[in-house]
Length: 214
Image 1: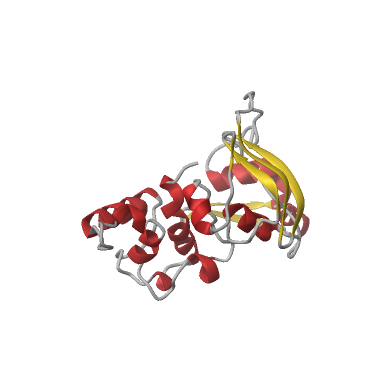
Image 2: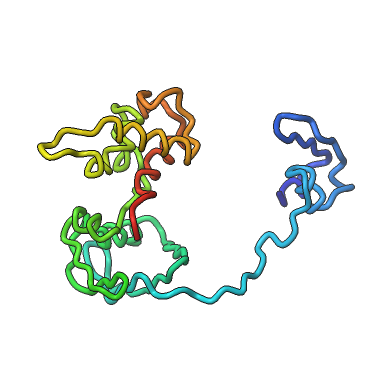
């Protein structure tokens, strides 16, 4: 946005495929340009919220593993915690150690007051911990399979009968609900997931975990 005011003489605004206005940049402010772009005034983009912190759900103490050295933090109910760092700094490895995809060599993880030991990804899932990969094509999807198969792959335990057969009607209903709730743009649940746009692939990778808790 700032570059518009630094290098442009005129600006043309389109919104939802419709021409809105053409103006000299000198006659505009950043706020007035944003108002034309979104169709309304944006006030308090980041309003202050007086909200008491929730109870501690996840507590990590001195966690160590491959690429992870003595990490400690707490996560409260309703809180979103961002983990930042350069490539190779250990962000991905930290998440995999928590989930159980990489071995924990020392440290403690407490979930809702109970110590959690995750020696495998199955242990992570059993404790309500899931891992959504930052590289969906490598770790999150099977590109040669359909949308339905990818969405249900992580939730087969919900659709399995004794003996290993699937409840196909339940599977189809769950996938249909996922597609609707997450607004996944696909002509059919039988469409190869590799043919979807990147955003719809990401939603297809994420949404099967939405029913799992915590």
